[in-house]
Each structure stands twice: as C-alpha cells, then as structure tokens.
Image (cartoon, rainbow, N blue to C red; front, side):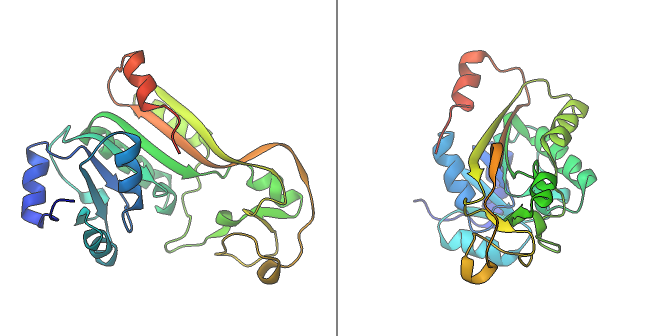
Length: 235
C-alpha cells in the first residue's frame, strides 16, 4: 500500500482528479476498503469529522481528511463516485441529509452509493413487542435521521435524480434473528443476547424484514451495460 499522503498532497490530488471516490463518514476505514473492492476503485479518500477516526484510517494506510462534510469544498466532479455507508442516519435531520446528498451530487461524476439501516418496519415490530437493535440509538452519535425508502425516493426526485436502484439486504424471517431484540431491551444495544436482553417472543414475520438498504444513484445518464456493472450484487 502506498504511503499515506499529507493534507496538502491530498488537496492537490483532489484538484487533479486522482482519487476514484470520496467516502463520507468513514470512521476507521472499513467502508473505503469495501467500496474499493466493490467498485474496482483503488484510490479512495476517507472524510470524517472526528480527528480520532482520521488517525485510525491513516494508521491503517488510508488517505483521510478531518472535515465537516457540510463545509467540505472541492471542485465539481472531483470524484468518480461518493459513498455514504452507515453515515446519513447519524445526521441531525432530513434537511441536513438533503444538504449532504446535494453536495455529494456536485462533486461526483458518475454515481452515489448509500448504505442505510432499515427503519421500514419499526412500527410493526414495536406492535408485536420487538425492535431491531439499531432503531433506538439516541443522539448525539446515534440514529437521529431515520429515513425510510419513501423519504429517500422523495429526496432523489427533489434533487433531479431519475436513475437509481434499491437493493434490500440482510433479511430476517422471524424473531429468532439476532438483530431482533425485545422491545424493553435498553437502547444502544447490538445483537441479541439472552443474558443481556432477556427473553423475547417468537414471531414469524409475514414477509422478510430487511436490515440494510443500498441505494445506487446515477448523477449523469449511464448506459445500461455500465449501470449493470455498478449495481451488480456483491458481498
């Protein structure tokens, strides 16, 4: 892996279009590695507001900047694509999400890739005494922008996107799935443990309840053959 660039060199490489993609809210850099492999994009730039996370990325060999995404400024179409994996849900509200996605549209040449936890079935699960563990992570740092597919499609339409694909991931068929907790489990939890969370009712779901949703959003008209490669299943 090449030596990690300093900040001045990173901005120079942004200006000259040498990065394949920008990854918003990168944390420790796992999303950079994932997108590099998924989209055959060797050079990714991680951007995170926390200096501690940027230091972790650099220690792992990733190029990274400490920046507030809402204020991040670079030339239009600087990157082939922008990725936002498990990031938008941490923003304060829908208006900030819209601002971020609009900014990503400006600096991407080809497409956006968004991975978002599913909040589609929160009300149904609550009604049967259950919840997915990520649905009650309060802020700060929690899940404060709990957008649904309908919210995203409305957002895409408002920003003029007319070519996008939605993939649903990680289906749970019944309440035995480890992402399902009893509704009275404390907030800020992860996968189910009987010791930590107590018993939970068994419920067979009327349809699969998905855990994550991937959105592929073209920022320019993309021919079908190229688009098919971008949205190709991967994991």
